[in-house]
Image (cartoon, rainbow, N blue to C red):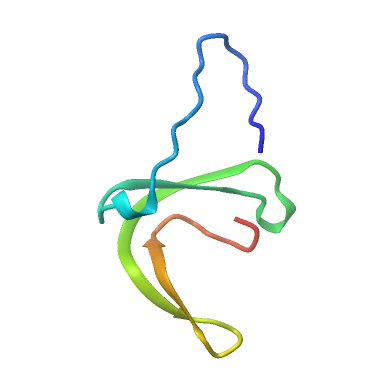
Length: 74
C-alpha cells in the first residue's frame, strides 16, 4: 500500500512486532472496508492470544483483540 501525502520531512512508519504488543497499547487498522479505499481506524489492544472459531470448524489461535472498528476488508 502506498499512502501519498504532501510534505518533504515525512518519514515512514516503523511497524511493530506482534509479540511485543501489550494490552492497553494504541493500535491501527488500515484497509479497504466495504470498498472504501485508504481507510484508517484507531483503537486499543484489549486482549492477546484469543482463540476464534473458524468457518471450517477449526480455530484461529493467537488473535489480537482490539476495540478499533474492524469491518470486512480492514
